[in-house]
Image 1 (cartoon, rainbow, N blue to C red):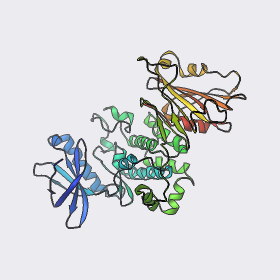
Image 2: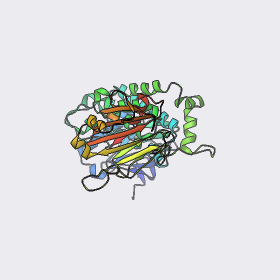
Image 3: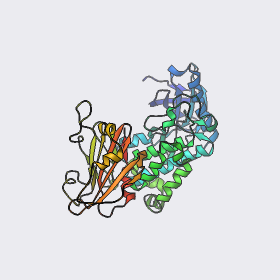
Image 4: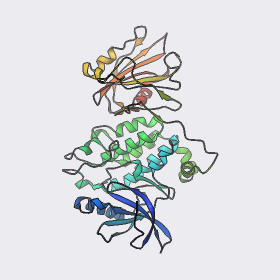
Length: 419
């Protein structure tokens, strides 16, 4: 892309990135001898008054808030052709999206970054602003700090609902953001934080927090980013955040992010498994792997196997080794069309085992029906679980081990993502 050599008082060195609405250039401030990021409205949107207002609103918000957890704006201006631009801090550490492209984060660091992102979003919420577009590309690392960027879709709470254009990034935005008449408040950002945490690979014990954050009904979520962060802290009384606090999280995170030391252990294996059609993803407990190419014996309308995965420390041994924990998770449209979740669970009895009363739970926003069987001749415990989601019967057969309780089973189900 051929770009400008000069924008205002700043010499342009190179392109940093380009999106649908703007391009960002690396500039040099000769007065300060420092680099800056210069965001310029895209030419094809320069005559759209609504988009121009969004662009200008972002600069005004960042200038007014002036918080170290948010990207700071130093100046604004217009090009000769009338397009507005804003001059911002340069994030020398890149974005979270860049870092994730290099491989999965260590769980402790993933958790700490999520906590820092929540703290940045809390700044917005305390100022009655909703970000509405929390994605890895909008989380930046600057001088060892985590900062929130791209407030182009942000709105004051008083104006965040009612006949507005669809706003947000699919996969991260709350369901209500797809409805132009819905009320969009701080709970929409809580949903984004939950989705961000689900894809970062935070430790599995935080799954209930992420589950509540991503409930479909906004009233079932945490009310704001402060409450979400407090929930993370309650779970982590002395765990993953502890070592980073004791060593100084900026130093520890900097070493991990930049790979500065050859003594740093390589990132763990992927924290999620996704079956080949992309319709089913399951979060993996530490040391577990995923395998599978479909649900044997079950076919969709095109004759292909319906989606399914086996997750276990050793997926090959799981079906035959009584001591090997694991789970089978599958999706079936045909089953959803002919029976209920309770009916599907009833189709999977274990006659030689002792059954506990059926219970109900709602991890991952799915209304699960669960039956627990205690067995002597096969796996010590077998859990049969089913629920309906996005037109699929979501089915899980879990063998968690004899000592597993309902909470650990729910934590595993909280990692099931459909679609």
